Image 1 (cartoon, rainbow over the protein chains, first blue to last red):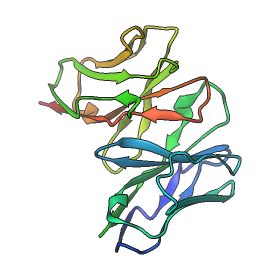
Image 2 (image 1 turned 45 degrees about the vertical axis):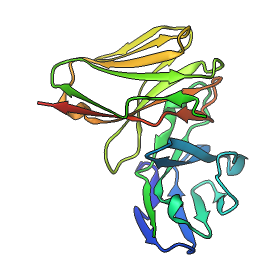
Image 3 (image 1 turned 120 degrees about the vertical axis):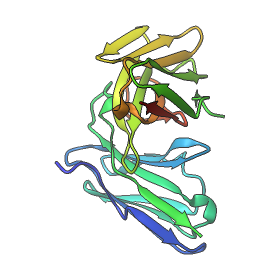
Image 4 (image 1 turned 135 degrees about the vertical axis):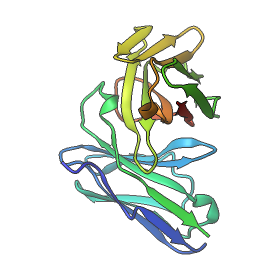
Length: 116
Length: 113
């Protein structure tokens, strides 16, 4: 398996523009997670899905952020409009639906976003 | 307020010596703790974990110690090798679900020759 795939790997955009980050989880994984990494706050969970259904979006910072998972093999994280403080590395991760195996959360390589 | 804290943003250790990375947590309901390792331009990868029913877990050169009364855990790497240079994230979760892991802010470990 190719692992979790994220695109793009790097994104530079101007303030106010819409940004869409994409993720393809590992086939067969029932959970999908979106994280954001910043220097100040480290890794923060934004939202996670179980079987394509959003379960907990309490980590989504504002209404400018939205995430969808239209099918088991694809998810998007959208920021509209983007702001400079959204600049961060965004990770997608997926895991099997097995209790007690938190270590089975596999991360993608991340998308480095820079909002000018 | 951060529930998982890594107060040292960076650590430099000489090759062959012991590296000790520390982590504190505030939520007494956490019962599963993990360490992830992250290389530049890659996502974090799982390294080692410990359940709250234990106070030590060892895997080769890596040992995690848990002190529940102090709400403190540490990762020991011995001997340290150049390939250990990376960012290490401490993480914790409540219950046995893989659903929600709380990460610390990370400690950058540099192994010098």
